[in-house]
Image 1 (spheres, helix red, strand yellow):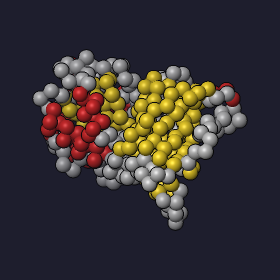
Image 2 (image 1 turned 45 degrees about the horizontal axis):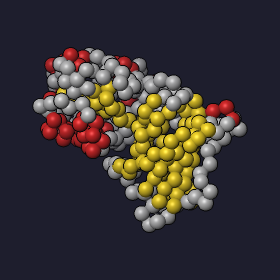
Image 3 (image 1 turned 180 degrees about the vertical axis):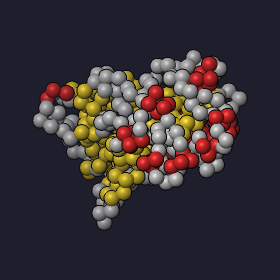
Image 4 (image 1 turned 45 degrees about the vertical axis):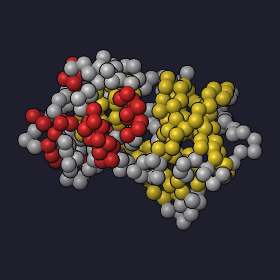
Length: 314
């Protein structure tokens, strides 16, 4: 899969400030049309927030691979005048809106604010979709100062995930290791690489039959500005769990030493296609049986990753 195809489309969080400044603060590439927010139409009516709800805010979807089953959905909440909304108490309700009707709420789930290294932070929520098609999300909450907020958006849910589904076998990719290069700069764009993250292939790590955390990212060429911070979190976790978990970093580009700041020279690693990655970074936690236990698009906090690791540790 060529780099131009891989970066052809993007899902972005966009901040619009009171002075009209527009800043894309979290974008990812996609080789197909992402499961991004779609405008409501006559056949897909927007779900309605509760009567007497709070002030309308913008909701930016930062998840590009929504499918039937459990999903970690990432949302940015934006006040059109003040910018990102942080530390609000937020709930998300789901509605099935395919075919001109509205069914729901199917479920109402509390979201959790996650501090990110960019954008101030986002809200993550675990949502379960029971069928493919058009779904509506109603976001309602209370800000720290007591102000209420509300927003709606429509999303497209696929029948199957492009990335390995939770419970599916992890692809046994033959990723590059330190032994494949004269120096680590040939296989990673990390300016401070940890050799242990390039000691084995994904295929060999799966054959070892112990839990695995694999992070796909490109620290030097990240479209989201979160790849480097994500890899720092992975290094911290490796220092604590290395005796019980295997850790691997896969650089998104096959030739990071040749790019020299010009992404037109970049070649995407084969593993990105094998894992169906529509964006970066992605982090997967795999259990000792080689099954995906959790997956995270975009930046995942240490708390989120530790919660996932706790479920696969012996």
